[in-house]
Structure formats: structure tokens, C-alpha cells
Image (cartoon, rainbow, N blue to C red; front, top):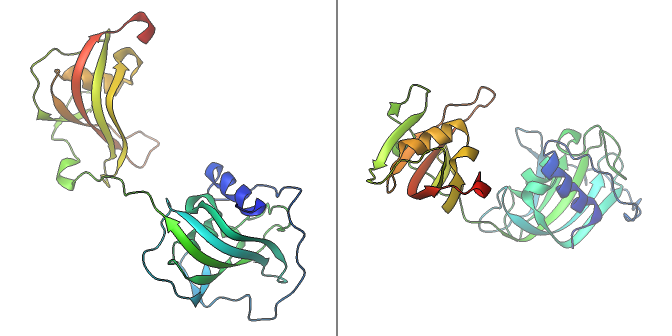
Length: 267
């Protein structure tokens, strides 16, 4: 089971990845006051982000990524005086769900390895602190990575297939990948489509769906415009204009399978 401190940490990280602000539960274990002597709480390699680490035992094989789920033994201490504030045995949690410094350190490790991670407060609990961890506290974790699992990588659209060569007057980009021979949808129709949304720059597929039923009246203006250009049986690539407040854009590949008049409940 995940310890109270880390469990609360990775739940909170989903809400605010840059800074964990959760308070420790009332039943957190009482601090251990043993104070190791220097240099027990020091690390000898620093990353550009400010995390320091020492390899106590090298592991083997692949490394976790931000999407991985790890199983670890660990103990956490305050750098200032060595007070132990948390520990866990065979604790399981997602890499992306813990404080930034701990997450970065896990991604340096290999299964069977043991690391000491020296985490500055800016990569830990910051100015807020939490439970037994004071505000602006630097932390040290000693971690054994027992094992991890990672989801399969997301599909990536090849570079040559990410952009569009034609544009409408509204700025919508498009390319016809396969021509259709059926009807064009109208505002009153419900369409049946396969689609894949992908990042226009990296090509990473962000969302994919098959046989999705979509009432045109409920779609965004650009997606509605896109679907009305298509005939049943066709496949198009559409390049959506970048939003004013966004640094990236998402493009979409759509196959229009079928359409029918939308029932009142669909609108």
C-alpha cells in the first residue's frame, strides 16, 4: 500500500503538478528523530532542474517514464536535521503523481537500483510544506526501485502526414486522403465517424475513437465545417487553426462512415 504522505502527494499532483500542497493525514507516523551524520544526506550529481542524486546501487534494464507505475521501498528525511517523515515498503504509485523531484529521480533509475535523491524545496512541497514537512524544506529520499510497468507508447503520425496543403476562407486546413461517393452532412444530421486527434508538431495521437456518433449541431464551428465538406466513405485530414492562447495545435484525421437525420434527443 502507498504510505499516507506519498499517497496524498500523488493525488494532489494531478491537480497541481508544479507544487504539492496537500496536508498530511492525522494518522501519519510520528517522526523518527535519529539524525544521520554528514555526508549521509548529500548527493553528488546534479541535474539542470536542481535535483541532486547519488547512485547507491545500479540497476539494469529500461527506465520508467512519466506514465509508468512503480513499486518501491523508500524513506524520506528532512535535509536540515535528518528527521525521517515518511517510509514505505513495496509502495506502488504512478511516477507522474508524486512531487516533481521524486518523479524526476524515479525516471533516472533502473529496476534493482537504489538511489539517494536530494530534492530542493522548489521541486518538493515549496512554501506551503505539508504535515511534518516544514515550509521551504529540502528533502532527501532513499529509494529502491523494485519494478515498474509502463503503458505502450502512443501512436505517432509521420511527419509527412501532419500538415495540410489546402485551406478554406475561415483558415481551416484540409487534405482529401480518400474521396467518398455519398452524401454531405448537414446541420440536422448525426454522423458516424472514425477519428484520430494528434499534436500538429509532434504527431503524437492524443485521442482516437471508432464508430463515434456525433450530432453536427453539438460540434465546434470548425469541426462542423470540416464534416460538411466530406462525403460518406471519405477520409480527410483537417488542420485546425491554433487558438490565440495556445502554443500548440491539434489536427485530426476523420473517416465519415455514415450519416442520418438526428433525432430530437440527439440535438
